[in-house]
Image 1: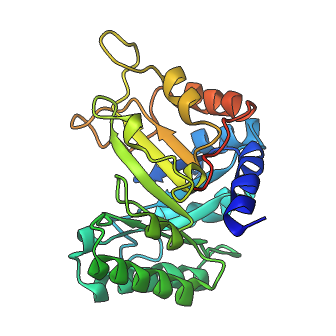
Image 2 (image 1 turned 45 degrees about the horizontal axis):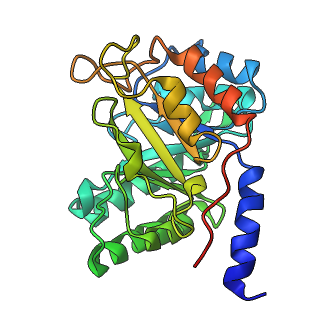
Length: 279
């Protein structure tokens, strides 16, 4: 077989074994005793479910080594040992000063030296937010350098998520473990814009939808429709009914959290459609 024929044969097999993780933007301080009980409860009830947890103490790591989020890492590790725990870093769509981006990455790396009680608090990698989806060489080179910096700081096994919030050039898929290719309100969500080509694998993409209506009256999708279209093929997904701009949509778990988790678990048990063939 030619290489592309082998790829076309293997990708559907890999997709059959796939399941979607839940990616959770934790953009709020937890109670230091209970440490995100909704999250820990969901993980306990669904041990086969994977999680990607984005810590964001202060629009980035902040300067405090005693933040509530840092203090909860040992509890999260104990409750969800397979979770990928990563730190939020803004990139300003490519305009933020590179030295500031690197400083934030180093700060998160420094958490490995901090201790809460007896437990060390290292994390697994970085979530680069506000990623430019400009397909130009300059933008690609900048984010290539950020990838290299993350790998230098955390090691080759570092987990890297990039969030352009929209479709990107296929070559960006070589830079990150996961790309958030759709982040929007429910009203603006358009699943048809999410690429499912062989060189933009759905298993390497994440979808984040906020402002999801508790009860549909005029909408085009309900939760079942959205999830059945993408789970278990998509790499990760998050849906919340917290409404922008009324509240910080990532400032707490939504009222639909339990239903959402249950639906993801259900759809993960189903067989996804075959992957597109390489041409």
